[in-house]
Image (cartoon, rainbow, N blue to C red; front, side, top):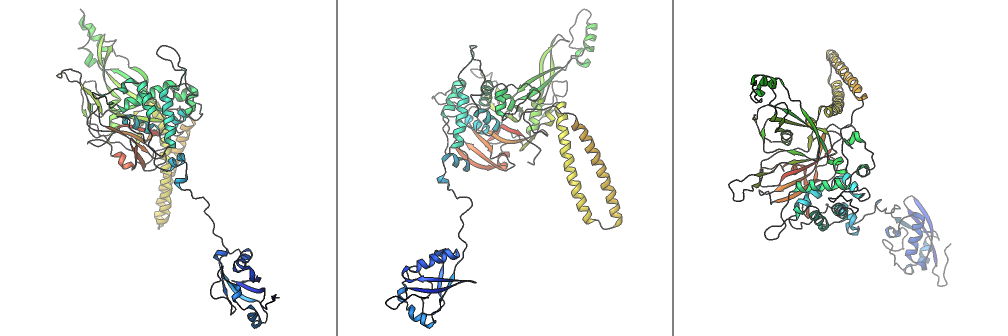
Length: 586
């Protein structure tokens, strides 16, 4: 019932609120106002009061949508109730009960993030040039993308070895160069701005005084990026040797002598290449040794003896931290003569092949004098990370100059390279045998995939009985061949395969993926400018970054593959590769 005040106007009014198919009986207390009515309806329906629209259905109420500040005293409710025979006045309500739901992930603006979090979102930070230090900056940016090296550095100096100084005493202090490198990488990961590598540059010049050379005007001289890279790995190898240091690089993975194959420190475990070198004497062959044999009184007998003698090959092993790509060209070394067909280098594989062979002069015990030997090198242990140096710089003698000291020159010719590098042909037969097993397995899987697709396509296209018969016979033959291949492969896999290198993928096929490049621009070997080109991530993406000291810019794989040389633009000098699980398209 409606309650009437002393003035004859009711203090409360019964309302029938209609919301879609729902109806609600509400007691409207006129003194509480419209906002109180909306709040009560919000509790009943879940429709937010600010999104609620109340419109009159009974005549004589407010006009249009009820506003929050509407004064109910302007309405003659007594008259309206009389006309409706004291029945509830009807009001229409519109609005959705679905409340606005915030995003499941809170929106965070870059400006509100701490600096170390911003650095993970934006482009990586560069390194400021402190006076011809681009050689250092470019190498540092490339090595920054070697996670295993970063892991070893993060554990330093707890994983350091007792380095022996030149005076024979053990050094108890961590090496400033390694500590500065570790701290520089940590600060780069946290910084959104270019970093000044002052401590790293200073530690480099203290460790290697040749990098502190200055020009006539006192300005720092340009240095060789490869010399810095090699010297840096030497210090890392000296500081982090032994099983504890190697385990820190491989995230605690224990590696035995079969996997390490002579690697005793972090530098050799990550970048070391065990090379098998075979020397064969060219002059102990009967056709060449008769004229070179020493003569005695019975010269005829001595010549015959030398002609029959054969110098046994000399096999020795060496641990290197890079491969060299000979880009100057030369002659084929597969003949016993000193000259052969000329070789013009156009691709990185051709340059590596030429650099792993050659002629040297060495003493022959059979001939009793120096003789010409053929040198052939093959890889006997593969690394997780591979560095290839392009032989762009060489020393040219200048006998006609005043000081006769010679001059350092640069080879500008273009040498192409791809985003993947296959080392199979450069390996020893033992390593090739291991790689062949996984290559055949991958080939078999690909053939089976294609055969299955062919069967599915053929089933849809064949219409006549004769075609069906011929297709079935062909498929049966293919399946029998595939089954035989699977059986042969299974038998070969049962034999335990020897390891070919530390931390390599279990089914490694000998393919390496390009992930960083150091380039040099300019015709002057003692000048010019170095830059680092680094792949953005470890996935099979097409995104790269180019570091021009403190400036970092995005680029693509096609831009990197154009760095082959042949002009005044940047050209590759150091290529960095990492082992792949399987071959990916370039």
